[in-house]
Length: 251
View 1 (cartoon, rainbow, N blue to C red):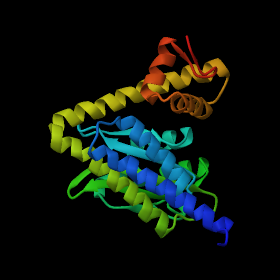
View 2 (view 1 turned 90 degrees about the horizontal axis):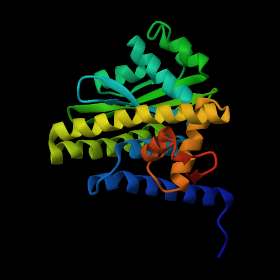
View 3 (view 1 turned 60 degrees about the vertical axis):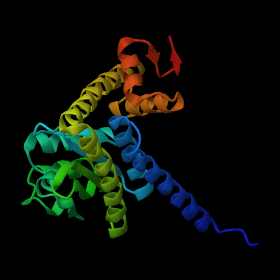
């Protein structure tokens, strides 16, 4: 039997990783899950498996407000916040229309997005695909893919990204069906509150280690995964002083 080529092995490894990602997302349909952990892993999978530069996610908090709930990098998080603050950009447009919004040359969109286009270029992004998280008439947010350099976001990347978004959406809306919207709102609010704690923890880690916010978050996330604890719990421990992720130890 001939050995598979390097390209064949790479494709097999990617297919295996894709299968694991869909299993992770599908688990939300049958088991309790942490929304923040799920969406954070979705960001990682989007970047690693789709071959894009960055990803971000806006989620409706069930009170009529959009929030940045997950991002793959600090630059992406700030760009998503910029869209919310200025009420402009592809991600907001995607949520409002419930349809995908794409641009292969953001810099050429100054009339469409006069504030967002130069800011995205400043952050180093050239292409964007904002994909709706929707099921029928329910739109709960958008998964946003960003590409740097001259590489486009192709149809295969968009289709697979939409598949990620669709399965995550079903998992979130499943909670509405089982527990009703009040419980869903409470769960999403908990996720939003957890994000505040994570931002505080990032600041602590950044100050302690003289790091930028992006590397500080990477350190926090690595600690959580290496020690098999929830990201929110790790952040809480950093804020209250019981966890020191730079030494990977508990006091």
